[in-house]
Amino acid sequence: MDKLFVFITMFCVSLWTGGVYAQNASGRVITIEEMFSLADRNAKVLYPFATLIEESSQNVKTAKSARLPDVEASISASFLGNGVLLDRDFSNSTKAPMPHFGNNFALEVSQVIYAGGVVNRGIEISKLQEKMVGLSLENERDKLRFMLVGYYLDLFKQRNLLRVYEQNIELTRQVLVDIKAKHTEGVALRNDVTRYELQLSNLELTCTQIRNFIAILNNNLVTILGLPRETNVEPDTTLVSRFMPLDEAGHWTGQALRHSLSLRQSLLTVEMNKQQERVAQSEMLPKIAFFASNHFDGPITIEVPPIDKNFNYWYVGVGVKYNIASLYKSNKSLKRSRLTTRRALQQYDDAKEQTELAVKADYIRYMEAHEQLNTQIKNVELANQNYAIVNNRYKNDMALITDMLDASAAKLSAEQQLVNARINIIYHYYKLLYVSGTL
Image (tube, rainbow, N blue to C red; front, side, top):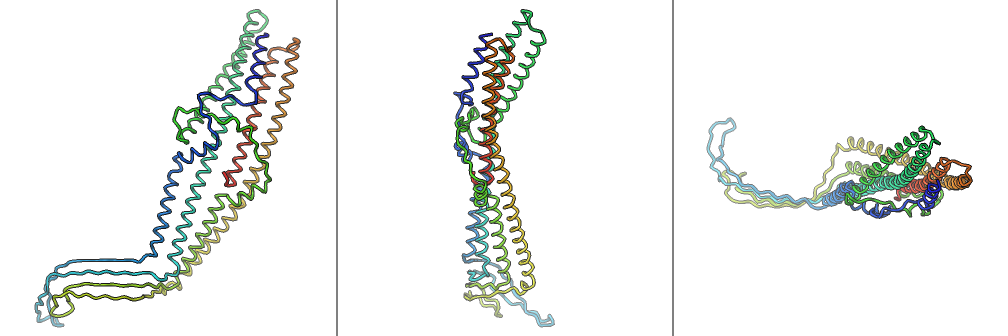
């Protein structure tokens, strides 16, 4: 009995010092910041967005090319058949010999001088779309980071929980040995032995389930981070000792209104719709272009008989084009664009309200997590006091071994919950960073 007591005491003192489990020497300790860096470089889910940014950058260059002049060149060779001359009543037909080789070369250049702002608006819209794609990448990156934080902290919790169950299994085995010895001596019932065997079986099953969950979480992390498959990710245990800031709710709301990705995307949508309004307005304005052309043709077939010579001519000028139908067509398109802009502004107002609500809710949860930590600290104190009392009673033969085991299990559970409470604070802090767009 004394050996079992010594075992329990050493177990509680040595294994739970600081409330944090020891690192596996074969594992790789990864901090959250390192995890984010690895994900930014290696996560395949971000690759399409990086390519999309390059694509949108090319779209901007394509839109800018509309400012360049249009140059068209054409060349052709043809066979000309003989012509026929007829009177108006289709009588007295006469053959008109033609030069049989025809050629044509033309070079035309045109440059838009004024198009009502369509070109510039198109460039601005392409730039805004490029920014929108950049925000989409940031949004996907933040979603990935927050998901990884969830995996990381779950792994932390599960390893902590596994450690508790493994030690409870060891304690239960020690008790089972003691109960079997008493049963052999005739001072314990067979039912007591069966009860502890059932408890041991349930603990071992739960331990197996926890190990499987840890394997799943570890596989998710190493796959997303691009690490070797055999890597055993170990969370940074110093994380629970970090100080998490206790800023006011107004600070987080202000951060969200400045940095929230959903709000920034909504504002870009509003700006793009305003640019579309200007494009619709430009349809009601004239288009002015400079043009120049050179033609080299042969033979000259407008004369009878045809002249078997080449004829070169050129011209330059300025043209003005106005679509009169835009006066009664484009106004409808313009009204539609204005309604679209109004809807985008309304969606922005709604997104702003939803963001404020989300930040407020997560801030409350964050403060609640701090309160839970204070409660768990108190619970650890009470569990330690209870353990000390039972320990003293056990020494004086006033308590059973089962009372001692229950007290030690309560102590272990309280310390495990204390670590989990600290982990919950970290989780809610990173969630605040996520909803405020500062992750």
